[in-house]
Image 1: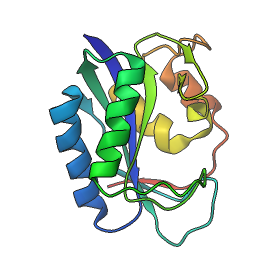
Image 2: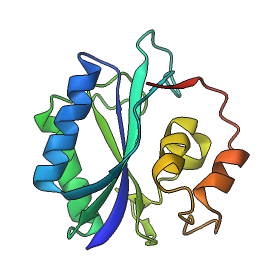
Image 3: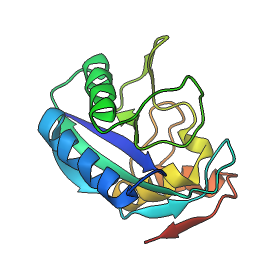
Length: 160
């Protein structure tokens, strides 16, 4: 079993229900959820919207390899009603990102692990620090706590 960290976000519809649906499907199709952060309300990142996001991070133990994990996560997003419009940043019913896959590094056209922009985002680092503050980033060799202190993101983040 590999320990992976996933970031969940939603800013459309019933946001709490969207997160709960994602957690249920992840438990069904991915593996055992072993840790989960609080839920945080955050501003959109990378685009403008009046709809605030709910974000959280979970730790999951899975037998899936990275590409299999990505395939299942895309399936879960689709089952929950996400329609991809080709835009990199937009409002969404659900978004599930692979943040970390143990200490493994993956760099392909369709998948990059660790998530390449996680260090720029407080909405990822704050909940990740809540459940794995001492986890060391496999590329930068720093703990999540150290990386959060270095994060320049000034977006608002409010624990619910």
